[in-house]
Every structure is written in C-alpha cells, then in structure tokens.
Image 1 (cartoon, rainbow, N blue to C red):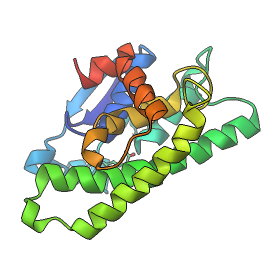
Image 2: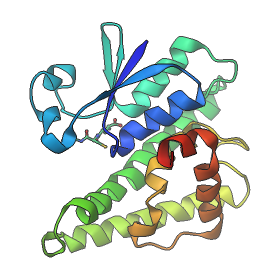
Image 3: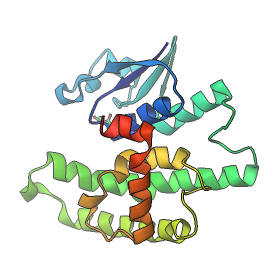
Image 4: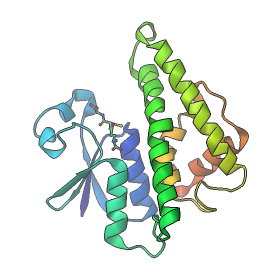
Length: 202
Ligand SMILES: N[C@@H](CCC(=O)N[C@@H](CS)C(=O)NCC(=O)O)C(=O)O
C-alpha cells in the first residue's frame, strides 16, 4: 500500500489526498509533525532533504513534489480517463497552466497565507504581501477569461488543475484581491466535488 507523508494543515499535501480520493486509491497517511519541526531533522531529512511534505512512499521508492507525485501515479496506473491528455498540444497547455498555477497563484498565495496565519501583524512584509495580492489578481483575470466560457479550466470536466488549485482556492477570501464572478462560481463548484469535500471539509 502507498504511504503519504503529510501534515493536516499542509496545502500541498491536501492536493495529493484529494487526488487519491478522486482515484479511489488506497493509502496510509504518515504524519509528519511540522509544528514540532520533525521535518527539519533526521530521519525525515533522509526521506526528503528539502524537509517538505508531501512525500509518497511506494515500497522503497520515495517521491516528493505534489504535482510530480500525481503525475507518477497517473503514469503508473493507466486509469481509463487519464488526467494528462494524450494530444501533445493539449498536454503542453496543461503543463503551461500547472506552472502558472504554481508561480502566479500558489506561490504568492502562500506568502499571504503564511504571514496571516503564522506571523504577528507588526512583522508582516506588507509591500511583499501587496505585490502578491496584485499578482494573484492579474492571474484571476486570466482565469476569468477561460471560466467565462467553460465550466472547468481545461475542459468541461473537473480535472488535474482543479485538484491542484483546490486547497489554495479554499483561502481566496484572505488574498485581498477582487475575485471575478466566473472564478468565484468555479471555486464554489470545485469545493463541492466529493473528493475535495472529503479532504477540505470532512
Ligand atoms: N513544491 C512542493 C511544496 C511543498 C511544501 O512547501 N510543503 C510545505 C507544507 S504545505 C512544507 O512541508 N513546509 C515545511 C517547511 O518548509 O519547513 C510541492 O508541490 O509539494
């Protein structure tokens, strides 16, 4: 059985939990106490020298990076409806959108989320947070153009991008940016998906 090194508050880990529920794949969760800095010490540093969760354990094989884990499981299982399309141009667009999700939404989103959740307000780097909000705002405008015309990001069905966005989109209200209408409706739709609900609001 697969093992998933994870922490309940870890947004990146939640992506993999959502994916495993979506695919109905059996696994066990291996708790890593980020709050006690267990991830910064041995033996966890031998599991992931970067000290981050999630990490997938498949026998002796260890793999970190949430989207790489999902890609590995998709490649390994050959599900009837693969999340990575076979058409190379649609697949290339998906890869482009995954990278933009990471750099234009999750990364600036983490700066705001982490500051607001874990740092006293007087120590916030407000300029950096403001710049991050602006960046997210610009990204959401790009998503709006897509979601104005279709129900989900890549096609008209829930897919990989929704799984990657979900744990971050959950916190959109604290990003201090305007959320366009179609994007907001899409977030609500995504949060209602059974595999997402099972992880984000069990
Ligand atoms: N790019 C990585 C990011 C993983 C990540 O940043 N995980 C956070 C938890 S959400 C973590 O383990 N942080 C602990 C630390 O940096 O000390 C992924 O996609 O899995």
